Length: 300
Image (cartoon, rainbow, N blue to C red; front, side, top):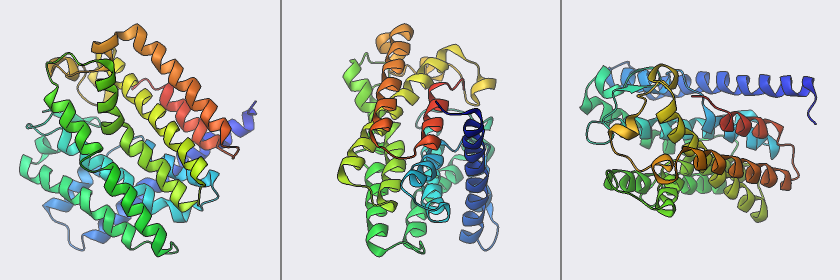
């Protein structure tokens, strides 16, 4: 059992990850825009908002388990967060989910306008590939593999495909397997990318990569199920985004598919599976374990 002092150290580590990620994101954006303009302001408005930084923290925490120094994993971690933020900006657009509230404040297209929101999202989708190409102390082979992971997980067969399924299924009763397919792509894809980034940087074996991918699928699904449950049980103030948005938009969710009670049971099963998989890695995964525990216990 983890000691109280170890638990506090782990909590301090996770707080440190967030602080370092926030500082590095600001540096990377400032470096991309020598002169401030409306685009740089819009990018900062969304990217530097208060956020949990779950995905980039997973990169750093998993990297630590594979002996990857934080100064090596921090920029790849920030690339994941930029892609994630781009997806939120575009999801919120009137032509997509049409949500006016994100991360506790007006969505980007409301604060600025729709055109600037689209362009800010475009920037956050493309700039990470430049950052990866310019990584220092990382071999050319690893850079190529990181680019492959990011392009795959954010591309037309993963993240984008998940959004297409989401949009084209509004108002339809989807079977559970289709809801799972949608969210394995839309939600789990960037969690998988986070784990795979660490695997590339840390020279993980193929068996370890397979375990990490299974963890990513379980954690990604659980994250989405929790989100579906909170959408109907929480409030906008707590969530930092519109509550009951899925209901209003007639979205296919785990709640509409199997109901709240069964959804909660499924989350517990996914947690058990994730813990078992983590233990099978035989590495120091305390920080990653705590991140996943926070995810399963999240209230917003």
